[in-house]
Structure formats: C-alpha cells, structure tokens
Amino acid sequence: MPQVGVGVYRCTPGPETVRTVTWALELGIRMVDTAAIYQNEKSVTEALKNTNIPREDVFVTTNIGTRDHGYQAAYAAAEHAISETLDMDYIDLFLIHSPFGGKIVETWDALIDLQKDGLVRSIGVSNFGIPHLEAIRQAGRPMPVLNQIEMHPLIYQERKELLDYCQQHGIAITAYGSLFSGYPEFYQHPTLQEIAQRYQKTVPQVLLRWALDHGFVIIPKSSSSKERQQENYNIVDFRLTAEELGQLDQLKATGEEFDKYWDPIDKADVDVGDLEIAKSVRNQKAKNEEL
Image (cartoon, rainbow, N blue to C red; front, side, top):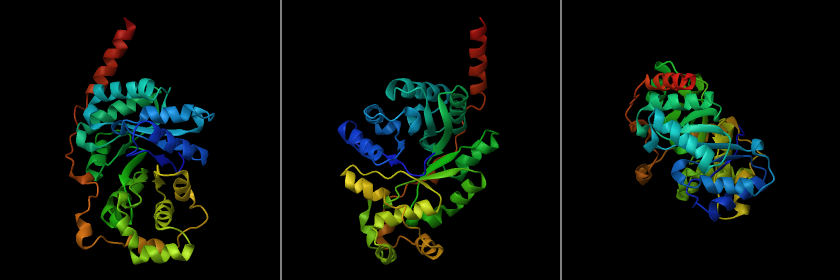
C-alpha cells in the first residue's frame, strides 16, 4: 500500500471526483480512497478507466457503510460495490466505515470471508477505538491490517493510547483530516508558522509531513486545482526533526477550539453481533454446492 494517496471525501460525484482522481494519477499518485457513503465510487472508476494505467498498479480502498452492517448485508453490499458500482474484479483494501453500525464482529466476519473468496486483498476498519478493536481480538478473529482515523497534531495526544494499541497489534494508521479537518484558522498557530517558514513550506505541507514522519498513510484531497494538489504532494524533499515532531505532538486546542468537531470514535457502543452466523452461512453454502 502506498503511503501517499488521494481521498475523495466531500468530492461531489461526477466531474469533481473524476477531475480530482485524474489530477492525482497524473501527478504519479497510485492510491485512491473512496467510500460507499460518499456516493462517488462510480466516478473513481470512471477516472481510472480514462487512463492507460493498469488496474493492478492503482491501490483502491473503499468500505462498507453503517446501514449494511451484519454478515449477510455486508457481504452482499461489498459484492455489489465491487462488481457493479466500482466495476472491478477485486478491491485492494476494504474497510468497515464505522463501529456505529453495530454488529462489529459479525460484520468483520463478512470481510474475512470476502478476503477468503478473493474479492478483497486486505481488510481493515475505520473510526475504531480500542474497545472495538478489542472486541475483534477477544473473539479470536484476525486483526485489521489498518485503522483509518482522523489524525492531526491537535488530537495526537488524546489518541496516543489508540495509536500505541494499533502499533502493538500491527495495525497501520491512515490519517484523514490531516489538515485540521478543514479548519484553516488553526494554521496560524505560531509553532506551525515558525516550522513552515524554516523549511519554506506551507502549513498544510508541514502537517502532511508530520503525518508521514509518524508513519501514517495520508489521503489529502484537493479539488480546487491541480497546482494545489501538487503542492500537497511536494513534501518529499524535507523531514521534520525529532524536536519539531515533539513540538507539533504537543499542540493543544484551547478556548473556543475545543468546541470544534473531532470525530468521536470512542462513543460507539461495542455491539459484536452474531458470532456464529458466518459459519452457519458458509456451511449452508457448502451443502447447497454439494447438491
């Protein structure tokens, strides 16, 4: 999986999504992150088909929406997304979008079987906190390869325990909302301004470099211009020092900033669902095939 990709969250289905993905591909990016809830999966496929880049050279991530939780619903929704919506033979990485849909382990079992059946290459989760990941582990299932969560310096400390847990269990992190989740007023923080000036970079470039230096996968989106998108990716010619990383790690939201919305992943109940339905469905399928 490439460490740098393009995300299409908040990209309107149609020309905006096609344009955003096309620009990224032209700039050499080979990973695209979409989601069922974005309703722009078809547009991602359109952009990919408009190029001469082989399908196997582009890493595609999508997920299962909360309304499709549960073993049978999740499996059916994934099959439809892959063969119909995305019109692909397989997906490189398939995620559970959120634990808020409930039936966490039951839905995870569907992803495990999708992987066994060759429809997806890797499986992971998004917006999962430690209790949700622990539910999977305690059920004796394979752990996700990746957890996609909102991550930037302002929430690094409050999510440090989750990051440590993921590292301990070999779970990679995709950071979304890297640019303060669309709140550019935070760019004026003196520490960010000082570091950006030191490297002659923009604050968004510093934030994305911070994520890379922590080992996170990044999926920035820019649909305003190809030049703006190229700026997001122009971050390979510098690295932050350990001291600078530490300074950014300690940034805190203060005053009215506390009222800003950071994705509340830990507030979802831990609903594991039916832990036996996957086995039951697979056994019934095997019997039907014997008849």
